[in-house]
Image (cartoon, one colour):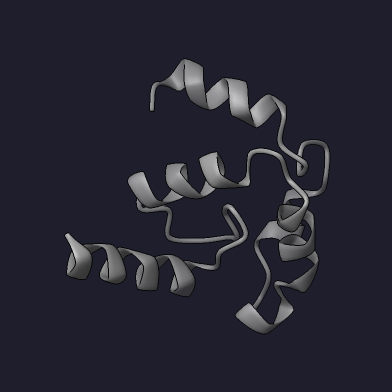
Length: 80
C-alpha cells in the first residue's frame, strides 16, 4: 500500500476528527468505544491491512487490538 493510497482511505475513516486517545486504551477491555467506531467505518478493512503490513504495535486499528492483530498474523502464517 503506497503512501498515497493510505492517505485516501484515511480521509474516509470514521475515526477522523475523533480524539486519538480513544484508539489507545489502557487495556483491551477498555477498547469498546474504539471498536464501536471501527465497526461502522467504511475503510475498516484497509485500516486493518495497513496495521498488519506495518506491524503496528499499539492502538486499535481496523477494529483490532494489538493482541488480535498478532493472532491474525499467526493464523495467516498457518494457512499460507
